[in-house]
Length: 82
Image 1 (cartoon, rainbow, N blue to C red):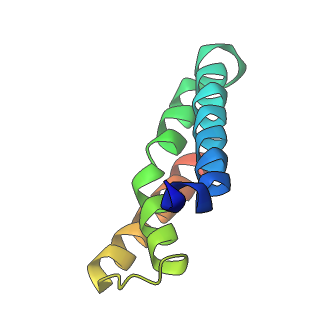
Image 2 (image 1 turned 30 degrees about the horizontal axis):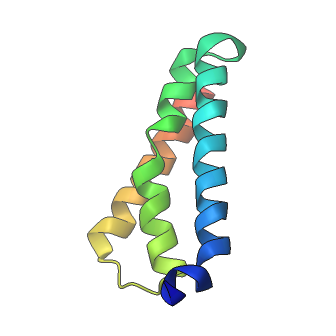
């Protein structure tokens, strides 16, 4: 139980952020935003996970993963401009 208590604040923050993200996604996709934009931005969560693993956890990220994140972000910019 000691290991859980030391991480309790981080776990609570993760829970709040996850719940907040789901709530905002539901609100944006139902009535407050364009479904096309919401869907594209919502699909970026794997790229965010890779970036967090790289910078927060100092995990090694392969060049292909870096390239895929970059291509995805360029695609989002191109969709939003077009």
